[in-house]
Image (cartoon, rainbow, N blue to C red):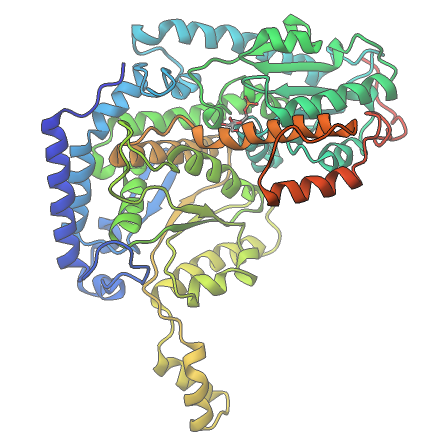
Length: 586
Ligand code: F6P
């Protein structure tokens, strides 16, 4: 059961926070420590000038990832205060608890064992039962992947599958979709698609390109109760039955991944096509489980294993490296510095890799569904801010959009640059341009452009002194804006696995420092409950029955409009199958 920090350790933690704030006050010359969204008062450029070893001092490498955090507003003394905070918060002990299967998700009474899914061995007896379960499901998954990819498992007319549609949302979509795209160079001819939104356009647009006879559906839902997933799966089943003439037996075209085997069976999926997961795997941490099936179908079982191996090597680093050298701890401490000492509530993550363009969306769920919390593990309102808003987009696209705000906006926003040094698609010097741009952005954020430089440039461009002085202010970039760079050789399954695990553990470390539970998500439930009650009321009123439930005026007005304009077509009509394509028979 949940074991809170002892009273003594709580006192030590409060003391570590006070000492850290004092060091920050001195080192960063801050008057007010919380709530100020300006650039840090520490002159980072000056810190480089006065410490020839700064770059080496504040960079580390593990599991194929090189992390340079020397451009953050840290000094050796401040860093030491942050590391002491992590130690005092009990990060090492908490990591042990997670890996050895304590029920650290105490509000749901659950273990948190996603790391076990990628572990090659079972290091402790305490989790051996779970380890056995993983091995058994893995055997079945590997077999299915092989069968689908080689054409041994076919559709009901004996034709080889050309397309897989994963139907799932949140953790049952974002991780697999992000990884599948990130590993595009490893994909085979089998095309994997993802449908998540309850908006029918998502399903209709996807199916419009597909032949039902050669399409396999993976219904991915831990609970098998999620509205979006069940709605899309039901429509997909109807499409299959009507467009392909499958009839009642859809079993050859549907597999499920779920911890709710009964519900999946009731949907019509045969028991031997249901791949279980367990309550000790959180949705947003589940891509390593059978939820990763679409990844394995797209890139093959061996590449899926390589992804897991990369993550496992980050797990070992997290468990073994001293806090000061520990990449997840380092990333978390930079977050604590930014949020709690510098008052920054926004965090941009910018992959300079088109194939990683879904990484920010994946990271949003991982970070904000985990740490977007306002009370600590004991239910008391947090004394300090917790999770920042995480966002981002692939470089260089963002440079022609929101980078304006990063460079000249009134807020200073810490940035993580993710940079593969090699491309899978070398094309002239395009990749060198890509990496150069990442380097240039980090440099521009730090060094900025002074009034003097701006004025000089304007004069060189032929402006009069008066014009130059007038325009200069608009061209100034204040600089001193923090960033870190994570560089790796290439986006391979291994490096991607390590990168994901790095951020998973970073989120965990922050949760330990903030003393909150990163593994529940009660905040998303209320909207689901209200949605259900509104839908029930719509069903009642459709028959001309008077209102049963009184809603607030704003909801009521929109409801009235919806009832006036509502369309309710039969399930199959909007989804027209594409002409059957030529496919090799099994
Ligand atoms: O609504 C949030 C959430 O519960 C996520 O945590 C989860 O990943 C997602 O919904 C999907 O849930 P399921 O896999 O049970 O369909």
